[in-house]
Image (cartoon, rainbow, N blue to C red; front, side):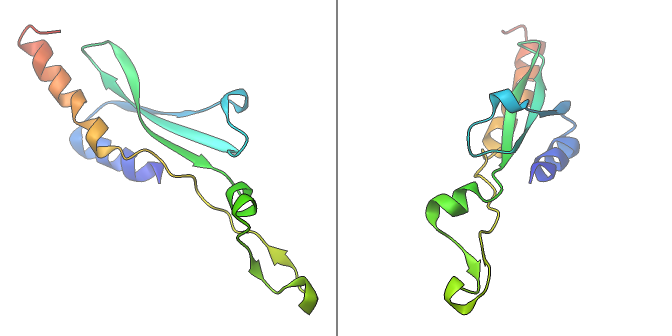
Length: 108
């Protein structure tokens, strides 16, 4: 999912970086989290545009979602992996080019 946002930034020519968040900063649900940050020249910093987490089967267990044969059928009940919703990046990408244009015109 993060690669869709990466491709979008590449097409627009926006400088970006993908950051893997350290485990101490994750919530109980996420086993891994990636952030896509774009460069905002006006503020001189990278800002987060997209966040995508791998929650493995945490959410499925909490929602009691399962698949497979039931225990009554002597089968194994499994919980599917569910990606956590992630921030829609298109509205957040627009400020980067606008930020550059404002800076060229002498604004902050």
